[in-house]
Length: 101
Image (tube, rainbow, N blue to C red; front, side):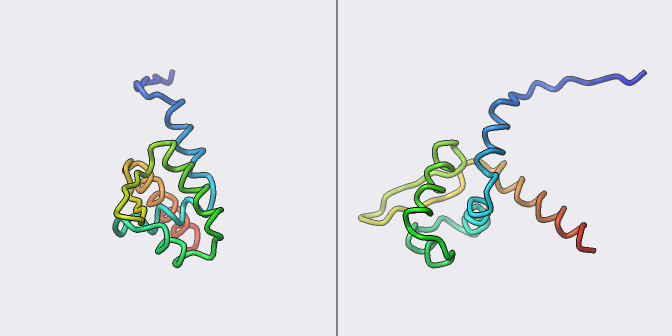
């Protein structure tokens, strides 16, 4: 007989985080923000995504608590707030690497 160990995890919260990360553009944003906090204009320069589209993706990540933003004059800079996002990205990269070998 298999014994199941129950862990006290709020799967609703975890599912919301996964849902917010379930887009290639948002995963790329997390990859960029892993390096350092960065301003929206610079993120846009690193990605071939229209500004309005980028703002929508950042809003989804911010509303889910994955990233946070701060204002520096008229610049808005983003950083990773929830380290689980970076960990999930690392797992995805490791899985992709394992599949390519």
